[in-house]
Image (cartoon, rainbow, N blue to C red; front, top):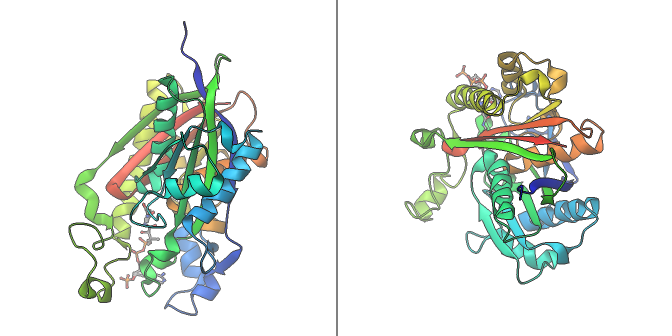
Length: 330
Ligand code: ACO
């Protein structure tokens, strides 16, 4: 018997209402709209409202995805939440989201931390678990409230990040030739210190000293991350295409992690693809880490950029430094 394929049945996303423009941000730090836009392509980002939690954003995106899939909470038996900003250090945001969504008790719920590559890692995990035959329908959410871990005094990082959520419902299909073609995941663990949060984990638990030093905020060596990002994304895209006997020109749309327009442009150049084959919304949201790809995927689908039969390439990198890519035929 041939194996059933794993398919995306619906997508959804959510961005908080509050828009923080570069111009407004530049009133609080030594920067400008011109600098931020030229170096990153970002014009504005969304910021969660006071009291609006990661789980709240995830719930809206998930409800949109369920509605798009014409399914209800009762249909789900697997929930994976990709995030580095769960509501609480413990337990998993997935358990809080399960309750808020009213998912059945018999739903496997867990978080996955692969930073900006988190959604692709979570999607791959969900597809593998569904393919095992032990689960029927998965909800995969990428969600971040990065505004809570950004140092708003640090102009080298705070201009880059934003909040938001994206979700997909994944199921099994007997239709031949559609669904997940393959994934390629990896990490450069030797480069952890290029992008990390020094305190608040078990190696340096929260203390008065760590808090006053601002060590619970994201620290990043931007230039080095930039170079690694281009290399990792380009290599993983090339590898996955080669592995499946495809060429870049066969890709209808590339949905890259939205960190910096210059990173996306560099990958387009390496893959020798025109920029109109890349979905870009970094100008409106900045880098929303694990939420970036599912938000872009939802916007791409809803705006008609993905048609039946198309092949889409998802490609990401993030803290870890993790990387991942996925090929999907619609
Ligand atoms: N406004 C004005 N000037 C600034 C700002 C700012 N916001 N930030 C830095 N500068 C200054 C620097 O201090 C530096 O000044 P100097 O030359 O006097 O020292 C100058 O601008 C140039 O800084 P660079 O860091 O060299 O600028 P660069 O062109 O590399 O752009 C950027 C910086 C945008 C951060 C880029 O390196 C980048 O995008 N890196 C990748 C980041 C990323 O994608 N991270 C994603 C992973 S996130 C995750 O996994 C959660």
